[in-house]
Image (cartoon, rainbow, N blue to C red):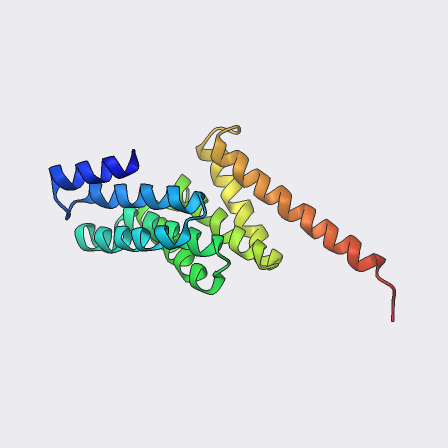
Length: 173
């Protein structure tokens, strides 16, 4: 269906249209979720390049495309490539949408997840806390995004507790 939507949008709107970038992004998200990373990456890159060209650097869709490409890299453990993209997406979302926008919370959560995967817990926790505060204020307490952030924070805290427990049970030398 995503392939059909992309083909239809290209035929009806032409290759140079923001809706084509959205379709590329959607197809890439599907491939990413299926672990089809080599197929997803060029689609994410095309969507980002097209969004930048058609909408300009200062557009929320560019932030979304940066975020999605970073998610792909994060999924593959390509953390050095993902981090600057997550940071750019966060900065752009904050500037364009304001500090309290749900997309900012999404970016905070994703950057926090990157840090958490790397064991950078002290950097991850404040990002999760900011994201949770935004979600609880702007979305419902049981909104899926709020639940996701809450679960991310709980997972981080469980990992911290486990690490502390393991380090205290190790024999002293």
